[in-house]
Amino acid sequence: MLSLRTRLALAYLAVIVFVVAVTAFGAHWSLSRAVHGQLDAALLALAETEMAMLPRDTKQPATVHDPSRETTAPPSLVRLDRLVQIVNSDGHVVARSANLGEATLPAPAALLARLAAGETVFETLEGFGEEPVRMVSVPAPGHGPLLAVQVAGSLDDVNNVVGSASILFVVMGLALLLAVGTAGALLTRGAFQAIGEVVQQAHRIGEASMSERLPHPGTQDEIGRLVDTLNEMLSRLEQGFEAQRRFTADASHELRSPLSRLRTELEVALRRPRDAAAYVDALRSCMEEVERLTLLVEELLVLARIDAGQERGPVETVSLNELAEEAVRRLQPMARERQIEIVLAHSQPVTASVARGAASLVLANLLDNAVKFSVSGQRVTVDVASEGADAIVRVSDRGPGLRLDELPHLFERFYRGSTARSEQTSGVGLGLAISQAIVGSYGGRIDASNLPDGGAVFAIRLPRNV
Image 1 (cartoon, rainbow, N blue to C red):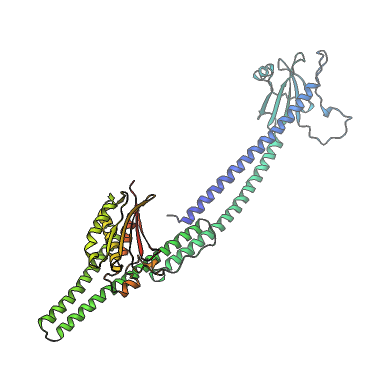
Image 2: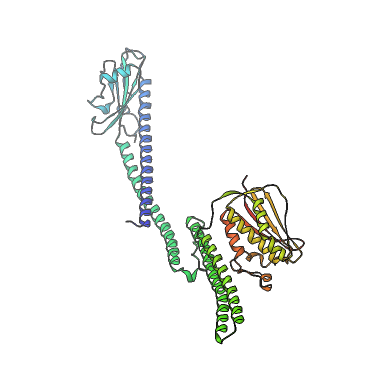
């Protein structure tokens, strides 16, 4: 199995070879066509010149304008490699250039028919003479029995030019392939070197070194964006590990405290014989600690099921007005004991997409907190409303409110504010964390803020069912 680097290098090389080959072929074809076109144009021009010099009087003999026969002409360095021939309608040669010697340019019947039809014909003669020859036959209308002027030229120079150009293209293609291949190898080496450093650093990062990050290549290309994404993922993992460690430490602390008190009560009760009343008091104290432990374990189990996605009930259309009425009705006895009035504000019917049991648990938690932290003789208000795509249930109290430095931590697990600690309010600091996790599993959230004239308000936001 080839490595990714080898496969990329082979693919890159294949693409470069293909591009160079296509470019060289295209350049070779264009040059060949241009050179052949120039030769055809030169032959046609000479043929038209000879045809223009043909006599109009049929009694005068046709001759070929042949510079080689003019002995008084000045010396010329022009190659006389053009073969000229004049034929009549029968295909007989009427005149020819001296360099043709005893040879004649071919004039088969098919060619004569095309010339008689007024067609100019270009041909390549492979077997004529020692070199391949290109010939043009131009009809000569209006000159009596004369049919056409034929001019031929050697293709040797043209082939030499094309051949030399082909060699040049091959050399340039190889040089280009070498240059581009070298540049590609350097770029690939740099890219894979950066990837190699990322891999090495990733191997070094473990649970004990989650604060370390992958080295950034300094560019915003694909590798740079990949490193940014991986570093963001490491940040989330670090936060998750830190939350897990904090959760474990807090859970251990919360479990240790009631267990320590329970053990102390039992040790004191067993230290010496006591009367029945002392044992009853000890057992009652132990029962309170057992109840606290039971509540803590149950809430931990709820959080574990939420994290595993097992606590989320089926989504249904729930009337938040009815849920608020039920929650207020259940909390009324506890509120009366504390001389707290719970008021449900009247509003238009509002429905949300949520599981009924989950929404009822969250609302009960918020109402319980509002009653516990309210001052005797004050009022707790429950309000149901809709804002845009959100269905909202607000629970507001007239208690001491929330400290600004505590607001970001309210929904953390095992977090208890200064008010809850100072008043020795029952609870272990998991109610708000559970409520936020439940609401979040249904696409909602819980917001907490202070009222302008004192007290706190918690707003449950859920997707509204229209």
